[in-house]
Image 1 (cartoon, rainbow over the protein chains, first blue to last red):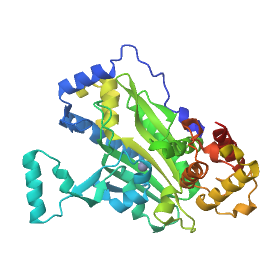
Image 2 (cartoon, rainbow over the protein chains, first blue to last red; image 1 turned 135 degrees about the horizontal axis):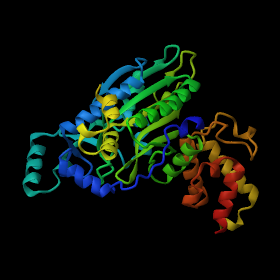
Image 3 (cartoon, rainbow over the protein chains, first blue to last red; image 1 turned 90 degrees about the horizontal axis):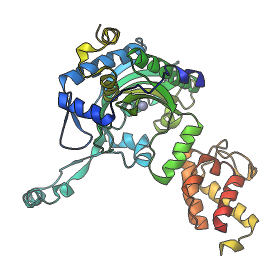
Length: 313
Length: 88
Ligand SMILES: [Zn+2]
C-alpha cells in the first residue's frame, strides 16, 4: 500500500512562489473568481470553467471506460445523508435545506418578520433533502442489493456543500467533486483505492503540479470524532494529494477506503453474498484548478505547452 | 468515592458497559481482558458508545490524548485509562 504513496512526490518549495494572500489578490483582480458576498462561495468565470472542464476530462480518462458515469444534483435525500453517517460524524459541516409549508397566516407572519428585519427563516421547516456533502454519497443507494460479479464502478460528478466558512480562496463551501467509486469485494476495493491514488497523483504531476501523498483523516466532529480520526489513521484509510496554492499546501484529491461502512449502511452485498466494501478516489475540481493557476500563472494561454496539450488536445 | 472501588469491580463494570454498548459479535464471557475488542466486532460507532457510557458509568471524562483507538482496544487498556482518571 505504501509503495504507491511516494509516486509523484517532488520537492515542494519553489523559490519566489507568491504567498496565498498575494496569489488570492491577483486571482480576484483578474476576475477568474469573484466574491459572492459570503465567505466560501465564489462566482466562477469562463476561464475558471475552461480549466475545471479540462480537469474533468482528464479524470474521466483515468477511468478508461470502466465506469458508469453519472451526474448528481447539489441536493441529496435527507435519509441518504443520515444513513451515510455524515450527519452523526460531520455535524458541523452539513447544510440543511429548509422550505415553507405554512398557511396564509404563517405567510403573514413571515412578511412581518421580513419587514421588521427579524429572523424569517424561523418560519421555515426542514425539507426532505439536504445539501450534498460528497458526490459519492449518491452512488451507494444505487448499489443496494446484490452486486454483479466484480462489483460496480461509478464515475460521479456533482456540486457539494460543506459548512467551513473561510475567506481563503482555497476553502470553498460550495464546490465540485469528481469521484471514481468502486463497490465490491474487500480486496478489490483496497486495490482500487491504491491504484486510483497512484494514477491520480501521476495525472496531477503530468499537469505540472508538485503533488505529494499524505496520510490524512476526515474532519470528524467533536470528541467522538477524535476517536474516529485516530481509527482512520491507524487503518491508513485515507490519503490526500497535496499541492501548493500560493504557499499553502492544499489537499486537491483524496483516496479513501471506507471498508464496509457504506456497504453495511446501504445493504450492499457482493456477488458472493457478503457485505460489500467500497473506496473512492476524489478530485476537488475547484482546488485542482486553483493549484494549476498557482503553478502556471493566471494567463492560461501562457501555460507550458505540455500542460495545455494534456488539458485541451 | 471512586478511590474505594476495588479493581475487580472496575473490570466487571467495564465488561458490562462493553457488553451493552460495544455491539460485539462474540459473547463477552468468551473474551479475556487482553483480547482485541475491535477484532471481536466493535465498530467505530460501538467504540464511541462505549466511551460515552464509560464516562457516565465512572463519572470521568477522557481527555483529548486518550481519545484514541488503542485506549479502547482491550478490557485491560480501558481499565488502565479508567484507573488513571479515577486517581486524578
Ligand atoms: Zn467519496
